[in-house]
Image (cartoon, rainbow, N blue to C red):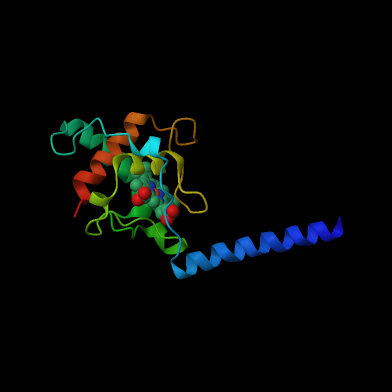
Length: 146
Ligand code: HEC
């Protein structure tokens, strides 16, 4: 019994150390959405979207995302300084054009485990509806695609 708990403790320590090293050396990678989620598409076209929908997305971004992802979408919000695994920089050239709608949706809904990126989807504390998630994605694409 004692030996077993020692092994478990060693394993746990190794896992934590591994995570810390991954964060320090920048190895951490945002998890890939499962194929089913990747197939989802945004019902709003960022180019032709109704301005009222875009406004809703902007309001969500300002109140719920900007403190980490930054007013300019560069990942440099005031809260970013204190967190180890840094927020995604949407305005980095090629970043958003290289991400599928379903990938963005999945991370926004479920968060990124082991990082500060919260889960916002239905049933979470934040409890966005699917359409609210699409509204903020529409805003991200319109505002920060470079
Ligand atoms: C407390 C800080 C924090 C808040 C608030 C936050 N995020 Fe994030 N976000 C992060 C971090 C950190 C990551 C990087 C996660 C990783 O590296 O695994 C991230 C990653 C992402 C990604 C990257 C997904 C990908 O696959 O490229 C998207 C999209 C995103 N956030 C959208 C949002 C939206 C939209 C909001 C507001 C509704 C929001 N985030 C609120 C910290 C935050």
